[in-house]
Length: 203
Length: 372
Ligand code: HEM
Image (cartoon, protein in one colour):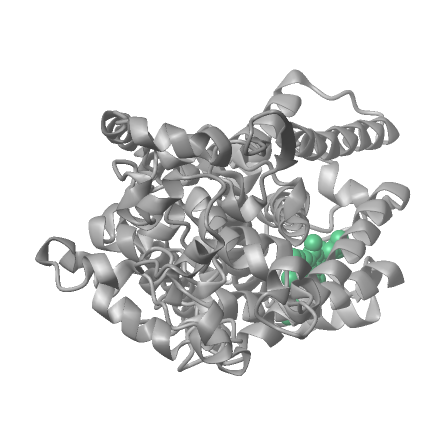
């Protein structure tokens, strides 16, 4: 694939860069709070809270950038197009990751101007970007302004439920990050996807 | 509120759905039914998975209050002492009427709040079976009262309860010892007594009898705020201005939430293991001013606010610090779920192992393929 495709516009690269940095900061400080321990604290609780709150706030605005960007530019189509026969496609892609890649086969869904993501990538990005990120952000904002949380929902503390939603979605996003990093090595070469995210061009 | 927020999430979905449709048009393909179905499946499964994750936690949340209510109601048979009603005629109301010595004239005055007794609270309190004269002089029977009666010695807790095996679990001796060490006695000894915080006329052992944590917090903080939030009452003990509690505590994030969910004494008294409630109020420099003291698995709150419950219901539910959860509050770092912890570590480990194996195989087999 020698032709270069411009797939990652500037706003997306900026969004993604900020997103990645903040995400790491949020995961580290979040874990630090959840497993806070006076003896082995990596960062002090008070600092963790501060960093988490500030990063989270920027994260919300950054997410809005992504959300709007995906509506007003053509980038959104990569997320919402071609869901026909999606299940079979996903299976084909999974088969490739489980067997094909070891046999030196080529990816069944090569990147072109209409298809930036393979089916598994697409479903992961949609689930993260349109379900888990909104969930983690909404629950996070709610906990910053606890007055807006209803105190009780069918016998359970609203605060507690909100927090639960926050940690579970946060955890899922962390797992996504790991998997995401690994699958980003499936470019033309192991590093080409990372280069793409810097230059904007798919090689 | 919650409904609204949920609505918002769905709105986001709606917008993106529309979005998806418009892109379909662009491609000039009509979306088949099967297509839209598979998309709904995705959203549907995502919701189902989250709900399934939520279920175990919702089930483990207990409902205990009805039992306690029953217990409380049983205890509430009231003995009214006829003799007390004489006193309550004046002291049970916010105003009283006095006759002149020849009974020809009468005047009505306000009852000073210090001398007013809430009779309803009195007959619900621990000392409800007491006659007024059990603690106060019989001479009060004559009105107007002799002014010197104000100097009568009033018994404090230890005078009746000290050395009594029946009250052993309350540790009155230790309480007395601690109060003597506290800033209250050191700072304003002659004015201070147990009754400044615990009104004998309405006292109830809230920490033991009332398992509703929110009520306990409000009740206990009320004791402190009676003086510390009032310039008038504070004046009785100090020449200084009442410190502004909001400002003094502005280092606390989410201050209002903290004030509603913990008591002053959580930070302002040292923990004594043998006592339910520490009574040694420390000078402000010695108060706890950190986060992890409470926000950790070894939360200080388990030894203070939740001590009673913690002993009663030790880590049921598989929660670390399960008792804290029953208080409707969430303490970051202290509310950890054992199963969730194990599950998350397991999932994390599996993912890492999976990636490692896959990555190593990829590298090895690629070399092989290249050689071939
Ligand atoms: C250190 C952290 C990260 C690195 C190195 C990284 C790397 C990359 C790379 C190389 C790509 C391009 C390949 C592709 O399109 O799949 C990419 C795309 C993407 N990443 Fe990341 N990523 C990181 C963190 C994150 C995080 C935290 C999220 C979301 C929570 C995220 C969401 C995405 C999305 C949605 C795309 C596709 C963007 C688009 O083309 O529309 N990434 N990432």
